[in-house]
Length: 117
Image (cartoon, rainbow, N blue to C red; front, side, top):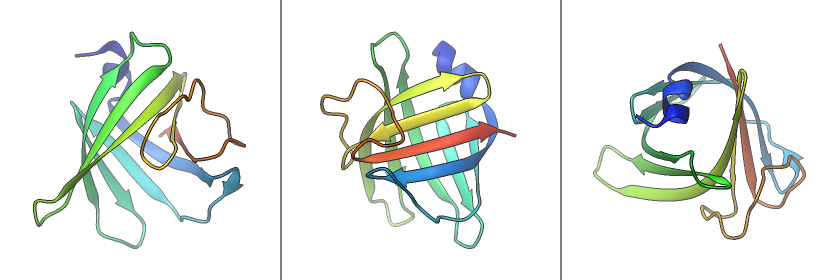
């Protein structure tokens, strides 16, 4: 298992979601990482399921997130991520990493920040 994926294991809470630098009101959510899967439990909606591929040896670090729905559809988002003590942040622009080199709260695109519970 990738060393960063191993460090992600466990329960996290959603700290913030930003879109084009603007903080979004998304409510509370719990993120549970187990092996290469992620289950998101939003406060007032059904859970969602994802498969992850983490590439911690890349610069910037790369994260592929594949969402899977009950009807069998799936969609892949390509992001970059930053992992530090107790915080995980990933970002993308319309589901693609493009030329991103770091995740900044004011950047164009989406920035998700989680804190370890």
